[in-house]
Length: 432
Image (cartoon, rainbow, N blue to C red):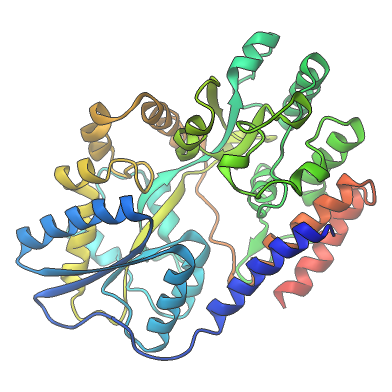
């Protein structure tokens, strides 16, 4: 594996190790004081300022003091791990899809079904597919999305228009590869297919055939054909030469919008006409290169409706150890449904999950934000319930196995068939 990529993956693995080894202790958990509510989240200063306004308004309306606790992403999960070990998690805290299973399985989260059925937590304007994203394997709801987005191909629509190329509705992988060939032949611009990321695109492709990537803590399928369709895209793009080069990936920070070849490039051979992303990222891409005309499409698949899903940007969860659960639930309800709260946060954590809340904020949105919302509005009817979160042991699959196999195919050292079989063997070992 290239030394630059190996270094990046080592850093990611180290972060996962730190989280799993967080020391026991007690730190700023729920106070148990009925007049005080601890609320924790991660984010930048902009989010912190907005959240502080919501916290203050909620506190004044309900006669409580909000103890707001915020951190950067990496620090946040280390703190939550320490708090969990010390049985002192905040009353309400932000949760991420990738950690949800781990927190549920360790009994750290309060089930919210009874609060929803009683009306204390009003989900009447929330799509069922969206709500199901917070379920555990037992079918109970443990977290409420604080915003949603969806898997999205962000494309250089201006370039496609110039070349006379049209993306069909619910395009297949064959459609995608045909368009990629046309773009390269007509312009010299290459294609990006998510190198060095996680296994979400593989999972997306598998969902079209009702195949699971993971089943609980185990690999979902040992049938190589379930994985081969995805790896065939990689083999084809590098055999035919229209994929972004492996060397270029070593020159950029993977996952950085600012360095994504869709919007940041110095020549045609360094440019991509597309990026695998999320619709909520459109504004960020546009800021990097405002001269480009960008558009949103679903990720391609043999069956987009089966593959596609509503994805929680983040969640709110209530700690099992909280002594103030009713007020914690009331906070989540306020954040989700209160007009002033949703007007304050807008799309900071993704698109509001309440259709009524979305109607409330739409007049205040920018043109890019309205494009994001319009795209999201069409997703529920053209999608299926999201899979259960990946198991906590999937870190090696996402951060090491996937990019390693992609790189082997890039350099012609492995076929799609070999990659599919190797993935099964290595993924099974990593999950043991």
